[in-house]
Length: 257
Ligand code: B12
Image (tube, rainbow, N blue to C red):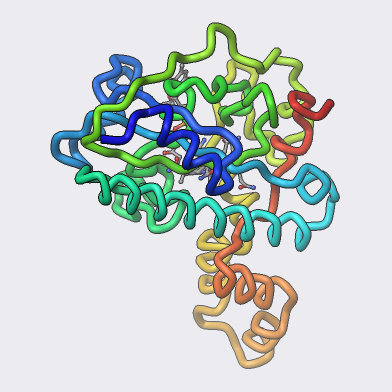
């Protein structure tokens, strides 16, 4: 069986910027309600993979540059995760890759706001970074400007330890930059405020537009369907690149030097 060190080297050679391994039995995972065994019977290790975003694109203030970079990073991440699963399968191990975002459970409890696995929690346990005031994973190398994936496997791999200290210094840059005022003084995140702002061209936007169409006359219908907002919704949903905001990432000074 491939060793943890060999596997991490392979994953980096595939194009990952950061890789770490967490023990599937880690009490920290259970404390944060993560149950890998529910997703893969006999789960022993969780491999956390990060691909860095392009700071120039995220901080450009141009949503198209930002979204296209995210699309490319997800493409690379998906490829690395699939290849990692195949590498483990070649060694006779079982493995599953958890989607970076979609598909996500849309049931009445989670409503799309809870992943099958929380990649940030796994990454923190695997020592890639710490959870910041923004509730994002903040890495020492790239700050929060990474996209994360997780592989669950029954292979027993040598595990990494969480960082002693989180790289987030609670400087409040993210809190001050958030246009939705979603990052609260007590460090909690108002998910509803964040999602209605950042997903205004995704499901919350579709619900709003559909409501406006109910009972509308022909002129009002035309005003809606020929509006830039409606066309933005079409673009976001067809491209799969739905986020309209990254200010909490862009404003973070960690990793910018
Ligand atoms: C649902 C979701 C959202 C929702 C809810 C946000 C949220 N905070 O969870 C909405 C739509 C609002 C959203 C917004 C954004 N998202 Co989002 N989202 C997700 C998704 C699909 C699930 C997250 C989840 O399950 N949340 C559930 C709640 C309860 O968890 P939580 O708030 O993270 O809190 C837990 C942890 O922080 C943990 N925890 C807290 N402290 C500590 C300390 C330690 C030591 C440990 C171990 C754990 C721990 O415990 C908490 C409770 O369980 C993930 C992908 C995934 N499957 O993980 C991407 C993800 C979290 N999103 C991401 C990003 C980048 C964004 C946005 C910047 C939008 C954008 N431009 O892409 C914003 C940022 C909002 C913010 N400041 O958090 C990235 C984060 C990358 C990173 N560096 O952390 C992820 C991981 C996608 C990816 N594959 O990279 N998102």
